Image 1 (cartoon, one colour):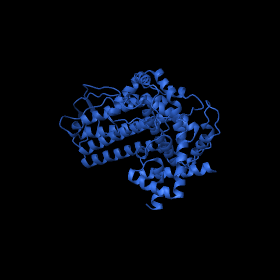
Image 2 (cartoon, helix red, strand yellow):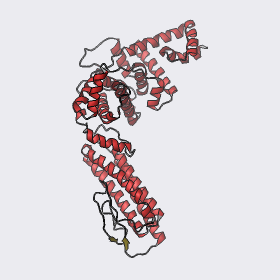
Image 3 (tube, one colour):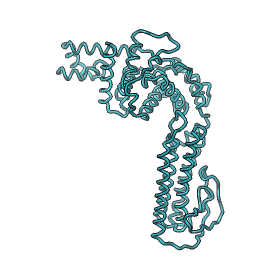
Length: 266
Length: 181
């Protein structure tokens, strides 16, 4: 073994981390080389000092009070654990009241709204559908905290004006008829609602820890996304077989879940 | 070089109570392990105030994750690994900040209120560790002080083993230079 080869291995050699064959070869070199021997002795001396450091150091103040006030009741933790198991929300601890990247959330919300509105308009213009009122058929039983309220057994008629969203969160009309793309999306929509409800629940539990400005920003952005969802649904009510609109609605739900997850993670 | 719990059976009982939501039991765990956790945080971040914040995070995180502790390892080992993850996560979150490139001036943080200032060798080494660049300091603390293997550190850090070894070599060289002054 050359001096250079041995030099590269001295750290591992001194720590006892070389495989046997290499260790023997380095050992032979070290015995014959004053420089390497001195290097190994110096490393081992440093190692001995490091390992002699006290295992513990007492902080200058008791930290318990600051910890205790952040401990959530075990029941709440169990709920969070269930949510975690669904792999919807990778929870991370937060150290201080959340200071969100406002620009990022606002930009995301605005992007969703612009993209959604533009796409809805484009689809509607391409299709040039009937302008009369559209009856919204099969009632949907909407559950979950994000939905806010439950509506069942109602029959609604909405005007075709996209500027007047027929739905927003709760009190939602259902897809028109069975067998449409909109109706086929219904199970996925329920999954989204469930995820959104879970995330909203976690956020609600953390609301007190958030800065008021943060809460305001988040609520504003959620309203924007909800508006985009409502516009997509209103468009789908008029054209329930539009796969593009269904995809757009799904993408908007994705954006809402993503934003809520971001808020929970930060 | 992980220290096992002094009385495993007693600790197990306390852990079980804490897992069931007993905050008083969790406080006992906190009191048993605080110094060790704080020392790790302090040595990795090199700043007393920051280390207090990190240590608090570790225990809050431990409370959140306690249900997932199955007793396959000693509680101290589990908690220690959690503490390492919290410290490394914090470092990743902070990124490489110019102001933290070279350690800290907060050397009094190493002088615990419970023990007299030690003018000896150990304190010299603590001070020298605190002046290391963060990456080298973390690897040195985890490898040479806490006894983790390069492979473990590399995995926790998301680094190549070779990078980890290079950081350790750098740390040892800088420490020896500092101690020789």
